[in-house]
Length: 168
Ligand SMILES: [Zn+2]
Image 1 (cartoon, helix red, strand yellow):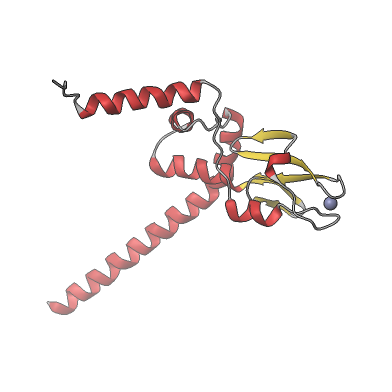
Image 2 (tube, rainbow, N blue to C red):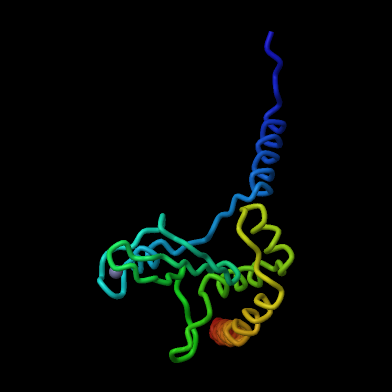
């Protein structure tokens, strides 16, 4: 005789395994594949460089900087795992961090909930300071979008009143 296992128990056991895996030092990253593949090239000899040769990683929130030596000329190449932005030559803000915080604000969750979500994905967290910095960055854009939305709603309302009056 086989004992029937309820599907919910299977799901729970799988979830436990996944949480243990993240506690065991497994780390996932959010990577812009197009950007990364475009930048896996030596800036000196233009030959391809390889992720397997990565010697050092540093992290700023969800973005990572990889140090990869070129097999051909030994130049150490620094590659970000996604696009950066900023003013002028000072491109020190990672798109992925700004987008994650925008997503958190847009979906109505805060820093704690975002980091819980990332923890379940085994993705390292965004620090409180970095979260605040990104929030300040997206603030004006959200405000502008809200104003635009209000203006459009007011215009729609006006058109409806005009159309309604014409019918009378
Ligand atoms: Zn090279």
